[in-house]
Length: 263
Image (cartoon, one colour):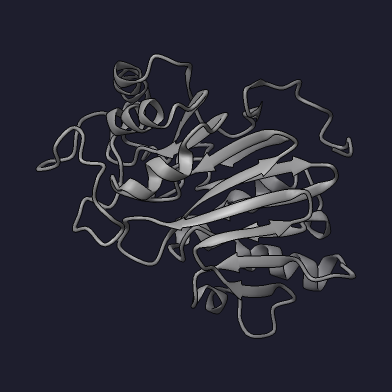
């Protein structure tokens, strides 16, 4: 399983960094986790539009779903695909691409499902709109992606034992005001904050026993170095920043293949 970061900027694109988009490849199946503002352009470095088999959208905010419209346009006008790309997303996400979209939408729901060689598990998490964190398993490896969420028990349970934890830190390095350092026992219906701090991503990785923490969804005006240091205060495993072009295998870094190479 190879994970490629297409974009990792939080809320708005940053200089040279689109919003959230992550390509996961295994045994020839290409799965996207989110496709936010600007991420489609970087996707073209690694795969043609018609080669995308599945897209899982964590929630309908534009920084996670806006470039579904670009994917739909490319498949409709430029490339052809015999079987429509499956898009698993919260209800209402389809409106971003219009009724004539060639993409095959289905409503996301908590629980397990299979997509090609991948086994997925979706869990509702604490955000301002319907949002799902996603666990991806294939070939004995596992990845958990938080989407956008404040601290909640569902994140810890979903991420337990993950080889790679891809965790958002939109609130920067420090703890969010009014939230205790270990406020992980709540459910997905809690009040704000609806994001994590970098320090909380470290807490999450430690509590879940993750192998590698990748800190993502930092807003462009945040100090990335301070955020990574804050995450490392709470997690004694490896901590790396997400950035466009980062390619990893859960459990360790992978050789970066030729973009034209079939995976």
